[in-house]
Length: 236
Image 1 (cartoon, rainbow, N blue to C red):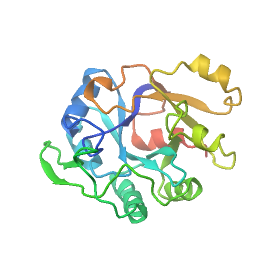
Image 2: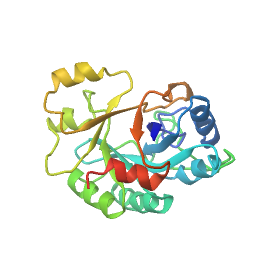
Image 3: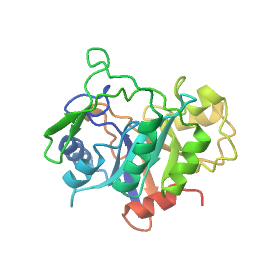
């Protein structure tokens, strides 16, 4: 079956996201736009994933994840089969973040919410920074936790694996690569002729409700389930 996806959405936990990116608002907008699967991928944190999963019950499939910033300053989408495995990754990432307090006056609030969109607390550590976690180690940890990794917005000139490393490391078995919602697939392939071994997928990287994807990007699945999606995103 063809499942329409947006696998890169930030909630109000990401300081650069709007405060109305609440679990219920995200889920409702994704349903309105006709999506089948979304992923909550806040910067270096999975704290709002459980709330979004609960808010989405019976409405849409929500994949728990995060947008990890590695020590190479590369953004990687980390998607997991369960909220528990995502939180295990979060524990590791939190232990590798620098002890810097978030400046809400500069970067914005970092809101942790429940499934009713009530604010439970504010995350005080600064999330939009690089963790002391290299790409290779992150790949190994996520694989051990049963997750799938997708290099994020590889068409961009900053915080992407191509811009920062100049290549996709062949020893890492990435199957999918993410390109930005407004990126032309044909133009990107013409400029990057060595991408034929990968599957390109578009996601929104939405920080506001209106930017969540329409029914544009899809994956073929045997069934509509997180486990089936994770299996399809992994190379082995």
